[in-house]
Length: 98
Image 1 (cartoon, rainbow, N blue to C red):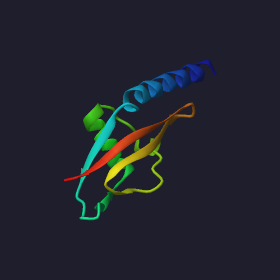
Image 2 (image 1 turned 180 degrees about the horizontal axis):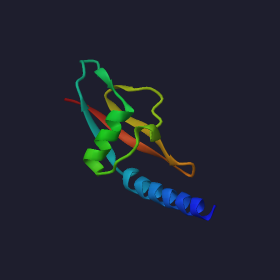
Image 3 (image 1 turned 45 degrees about the horizontal axis):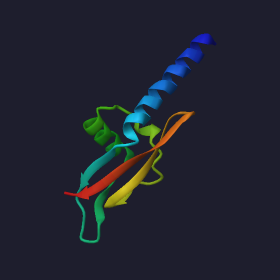
Image 4 (image 1 turned 60 degrees about the vertical axis):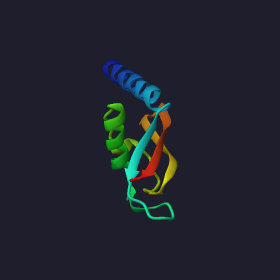
């Protein structure tokens, strides 16, 4: 039980550190888009995780991001993340045309 509590505290503090780094950042993703600002294809949570790794150097599990549906338009989007039951935050993602 004590080991589980220590592990839980470690995961929570690691999640809080990731949140502290990512919350002020804007993650930029480049995608092909049409004239109306609609994307050819979409941006998924896997794409967001790859962009976070490239731009912030933080490896996340895509299942920790709670993207209701893939992003299909240019602009700024908010992606909720839950790294621990007590650590929830929003990642700001900006999708720009390539």
